[in-house]
Length: 492
Ligand code: NAP
Ligand code: MG
Image (cartoon, rainbow, N blue to C red; front, side, top):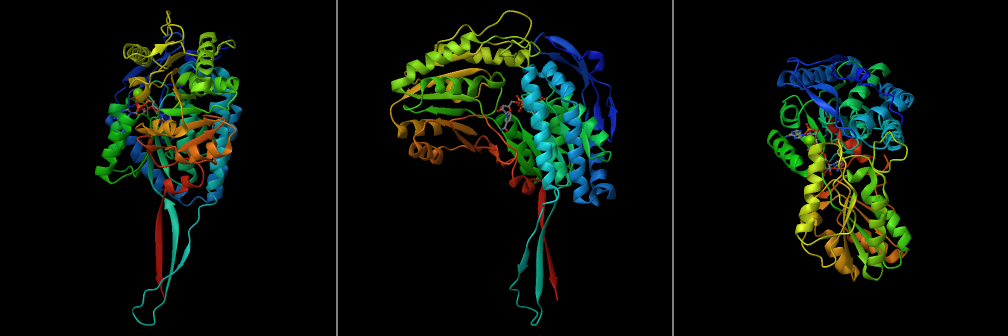
């Protein structure tokens, strides 16, 4: 076991105006190691005054010449420096993430930290590539006057970024990297369960040379700190990743205030296995799609549709994979699945499995409940051979729970795949190009993978159809998300 982070070395403050702060009221709440249920630190519980301070600081930084007049190439350079610092602190950041979130240390290193470095470097490049257009206008008066017009993209202003606990560092970077590349300033609120890597990221940004106030982190509860941040009148744009339920509330508030909002929300992603797929490949692919990150993935492949001819073999095979998985702390190199993030979340997952059974689902894997202190749940496969209307088919579990159903023809499976309020991701497993394309065309989801699942890249747009959200992250589209278009019209 390798657990180099000691509680005394944890960074347990907020970070506002380039400085650590405990907040005006000095109130705190505990955070835990989900693998042991031990308290590892106390974190400031931001009050309204703290949020106001952070937003005003971000506003002042936005308007200051050091940020606003900074050449885009300098913003690019700062983001590249931050990427280098994150890379240099890989071991520390990965250990912090595993301690606080519970995921496997290798995933913390390869996905959270290396992914963050990759995103920071990609987004740094956009700082110098923000463009407008020039336009010929047809305005005919006063006679003899001509017009020259151009558009430019200007930073949206102060951004409130609110992120969940499943990929704490990577989700923070998905927000702050493009926000800073576009010349905005930001107040980031990490999830109450997992604030440690976001705090460290802000410290590293300060070390990289970002001016004070450009990147602030507030810690606190969603209903208080998060809601106050969203409502603050000096916030111009809210970018949120989290549940559909909270996303709806934030969307409503932003509509009232006429604030810009991007919402990356929940999912219930279908995995469709066609009859030509090698069952071994289907088992490996579908198990990876649902059990990766303990199922705590917005695009987790939680609904499995398998062609009837190979259904039994594939579903039994995934149940065997589930039963063979070694649960344990993320620091243990033999662990294949870590804990749920919190006791509350563990209880919700166990409750949803029990509900699935009660409604007629057949649990093929071992009992999900695990004795002991940590917040563990065993990976679970529920067969729904008669396709009953199970709540676990409709609702997001956000845990390692797969519901499997057979199907007989493509039109039928396409209709079932789309019969969901969500539309975030989907995967199709086949070598039949025509069928793969037909399904990719028909599935209502922001991303459709073929013969893979859960793969993301900074160049590839990501986001949801339907109740899975509004807007796209990554790629070229991200620039529009954090800038406003301004037309400049000159008469001559
Ligand atoms: P959540 O409960 O919606 O929380 C997400 C964030 O919102 C947390 O920082 C939370 O603070 C904050 N929050 C809660 N209530 C708020 C309010 N009234 N006003 C403002 N902020 C508020 O979601 P979660 O359980 O942490 O995360 C899991 C969800 O995120 C799943 O539904 C998953 O699908 C979704 N997700 C989506 C994507 C995507 O890209 N589409 C990616 C990852 C996860 P507290 O932590 O203090 O509650
Ligand atoms: Mg929460």
